[in-house]
Length: 393
Length: 246
Image (cartoon, rainbow over all chains, first blue to last red; front, side, top):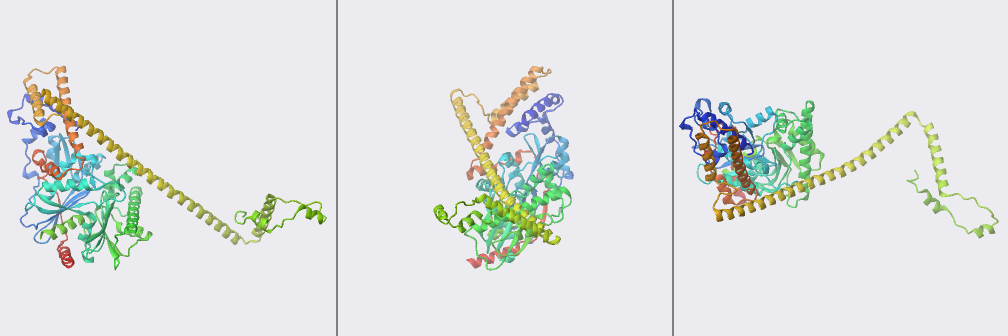
């Protein structure tokens, strides 16, 4: 917001020069948003519409879509899902990050031609999604993140309207008013003094504002719905996210125990960034470029491996302690499966390292296998979709 | 060695006590006195001599093995000690982290309370001014902002002659003032939203068609799409399970 004065001042100076040659066509009708974003560049852009030739247009038909939506509200990614009448699951993915850059006509047109999404807020051009991440890496800056540690970030309250627009793009309008949309929420963290009430309320309100009937589902439970059908929805689902690890112990689809730990992929990025002297966004890029944790090459990959191993050990230790202290743990008649999902679990060698760390502790339950979800990045959204369809169809 | 075997205690156990008169009756006029320290010293000396002799008798291999065993034992003791210390240190660090988090949380609460207090004060001031004089106060509403900006634009348009340095400065100052008011007013809204919102408030907040007002190209650019394995089998299984439990 502090940029407003600079922009308004420049605009007035520009206006003085441009007015001499400007015509009445660009006479501006002011409202609050215009006052905030008032500049000659915006006025010029309004008369330069983007043509179909240079912009791919989304044309998703909703005529053949089954009622019920799934939405993974993740710290790192937003993933929506729906099922078409052919039984295929269709997903839309958006990186939950943005970055603000200088606003001018050239950039505006270039971004649209390059297929980069932007929003103009307060005279600043806000690039959203994956491109924001790439820009941050190029400029060695950090992306701005609407969410932190699994919940709405108190540092980025300005981002809520942008978050709403992103969700509108991902979900589109409901096919009928009150269509059920299950959205993921974190379980209560056991290692941090936070609660999910506000976060859950905000996203519930947001979805209701879009015309959906919002229903929250804890992330770990969503993993159980999407990955443990063959085990009668019995076992442990772990969503390894950017902000948190969410754990759910389920017996025949009923969650017996759910909780989260407040370290995730972002924690690795921050620590790797610290030791290597780079930005967290660059550390994330390094992490996602294709490292094998069982065979790290060079100092940077070793740093990633060290923190990954530490994160997994930390999570397992917390899971073990929580299981041992809980009175509501079911007695499973047979050994159970542990399924890991989420973007943080997608790195090479994750399951192997998980297995190695698992063997170091005396786990209180008999486990028959530890495996990765079929689609780790989409697992939570698919689980939410299963829950939505089970109530809609 | 002396710590493993309590020599003074053993000596005490084995000595017999006799009165000096009894000794005199037996014709003993002088006695030799050996204190505990001297006994300890003698024992240590004797043990060292025996060990030195035995070491000479030991084979080189045995001696090395003994050394290795001693080293291993020593290392083990050091490791145990270090591990205990590390545990302690970790516990301290955890505690410090917890306290830091508490401090940050308290600081945030304090700031929030201060902001609320300031807002309440400004709100009451604004009410007083509006009721008594009907002159726009601190926070401008949308219409007032429009008026101010329109006036500024009109002024800029009507002024055909080049503006003087002073005029430009005045204009800049008024824009800065306006900006700070807009900034302040926006900030207040953000702070208020930190409180737990009611459902109605949230619906109202997000029901605004932001996309229509704010320039964006979100509907012109396709987001990343993907297809994943179907969930029909999961759904069928879940429904069966639900039926069974009913």
